[in-house]
Length: 214
Length: 257
Image (cartoon, rainbow over all chains, first blue to last red; front, side, top):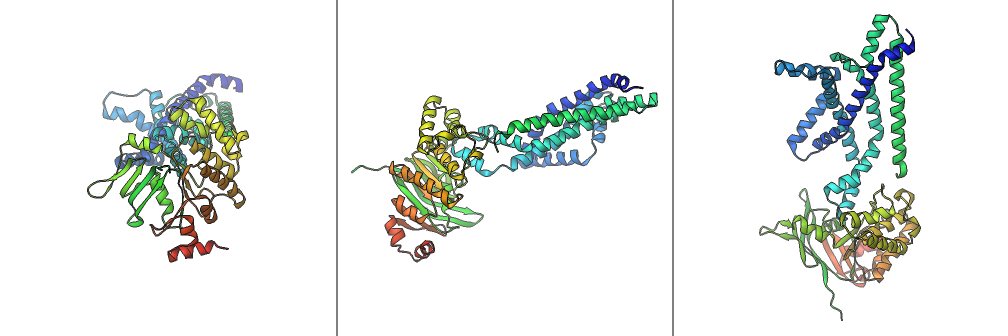
């Protein structure tokens, strides 16, 4: 089996992998912020719930979480089941939002009190202070750890195999078995590497763009 | 003689941090055109007093009145009650504050630091604010730094931008929280010069400072604080040159070289 052949046969899976990646990011980036707010909330029950949530999401394997999301509902509501793709996205989003939340929280808590005070004295209300003063600086600060997480996400998409969702890596394994060839796995490796190279390039570009101030 | 109106009145202000009394029964007022310096050893409560007056810190008891409007009043039990949010917002517009660490917004350039609040928060006319911004920068000697970012400025320049930012809000009274403490000695001069110029223009100011000579020269009133109370309150000649209180004398001695 040639490299090109394997690549071509796996292209549908690659699209699937990209879909998981982009959809997860799309929902995770804002959801992580919501959870970060919950984690920092002055209301104890909210803080408590988000703390437990983050603890569970970080403390158990993503693979297991995917299984729970996919099979869980059908155990409770007989006959009901999510389709595999939905389950994959929900599982990834729930898991990654926990990590993003902690990154955001670290960023927000690293902001000096003086920025809030200066804004207050100048008449910014709480929302204006956060949106105009705090958030832009937080985004700059959290970019490096976010890049880390995003790169991990690219590689984690392969975990979708645990509920037999046919993404690229899952395909590679099947092709490799049927054709007794390592070529599909090599293709998978190249694909992941190039994908992450692009992610790193893009994130680097954003970081540079934000370097207009220090 | 021109009748000077009272801009700020603080009555019987009390403040505790976890049962430690930081401010005890502080009363003083600031009249239009006053330049008041607040001196005192560290831990005397002078910065807390400034933070209470600018509402960055909540007080436990007492009254804070700006231009006759109550920002804080006591209820019948003697506990401080703050005015409604809307009223506080308005009262907040009466004063400005210059911080020890400047607290410029690093992601905004000089112009935006100065203009963002008046234009985008207080909805003043952009052209009017820009003209004011330009005039202030010129006065601060920073006309060429209009588009610079804070990290490109020296400490003294940052502090002058911070002063311009506070002035662009057209405050009636300007507070300074140790405006030169974070600066190298050779840079303090430029800030003191700016404050001196503002004093000449009859800008009402309250300055917490360690610069005794500066306080003597620029202010018409000096307050000396220790352990959360005002020990002396009078003209620089009275407080700095002829202190009545033993502690004031001791404190001032350390600065005489």
